[in-house]
Figure 1 (tube, one colour):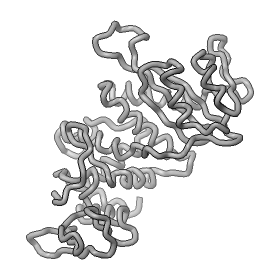
Figure 2 (cartoon, one colour):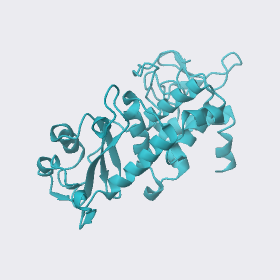
Figure 3 (cartoon, rainbow, N blue to C red):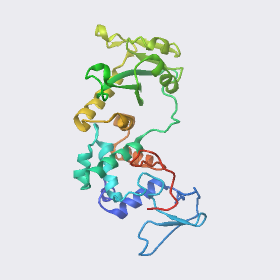
Figure 4 (cartoon, rainbow, N blue to C red):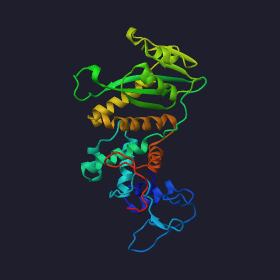
Amino acid sequence: MSDISEAIYSDETKAREYLELLRWPNGVICPLNGCVGTARPLEGKSMGDGWYYCTSCKDKFTVRVGSIFERSHVPLHKWLVAFRLMASSKKGCSAHQIHRTLEVTYKTAWFMAHRIREAMRSGPFAPSMGGRGKVVESDETYIGQKKGRARDGRNKHVVLSLVERGGEVRSFHVANAKSVTIGPIVAANIARESKLSTDEGKQYIPIGKAFAGHVTVDHSREEYVRGEASTNAAEGFFSIFKRGMKGVYQHCDEKHLHRYLAEFDFRYNNRIALGVDDTERTDRALRGAIGRRLTYQGSPQRLRRKAH
């Protein structure tokens, strides 16, 4: 990192200016009503640095407003360190590590980590995966243990991942691996012109008919690659995911599993092989923090008209 980029992790003013540049590269836009060209800096010791006043909505704001940083008492430079740690650690960064590194309470570190995962979550209107001449793999893995159930393989949480070869992954926490459950997800996320590649699971027989082609490998016969048929890309993703969940996070409540999936998907989709280094990956996560909120109850809130 350059001297300037290193400063944003220790200097609050540099951190704020960096976030302002990421959020408003073409000039400050009021986060309260979206007005352009109506914001002016507010000066004065009583206000502190980084305040703006919108002449249209007659209200004041900072770069924190309308983002996961709103109403957080954690300094912005510590937020940037946390983003960097989670974006650059291949298998994740535990709340205990953030707690020790930033010298914040464990509760604060835990909540910061979940806010960062919210920033890493992909939007609801992502384009279809694959396309003509492309192969998308679909596979499931099992992790953790459902509460109040017998401790055997049948009662683990089911994760479905769709991986475009040489491209991105999308993962989902699903109730089971039946056709009626995963079929709509596969259909909604993969372009029909794609070729679907799966294992020998019978649930994929009706699902595969909707695509340009469906190729399979039979793992029960120790077959892992046959022409274009393979689920190696999905298995590679599952390997990283499980090593992170077992070695770094160790425990995950079912209600939070989708957030961890968003985190691992984000790093995979912004990996070095796709030309994204640690700094750019961190910047992309920071941009994802805009327009999102996550409260302790886990419910998004509307933008506040008062900045805190």
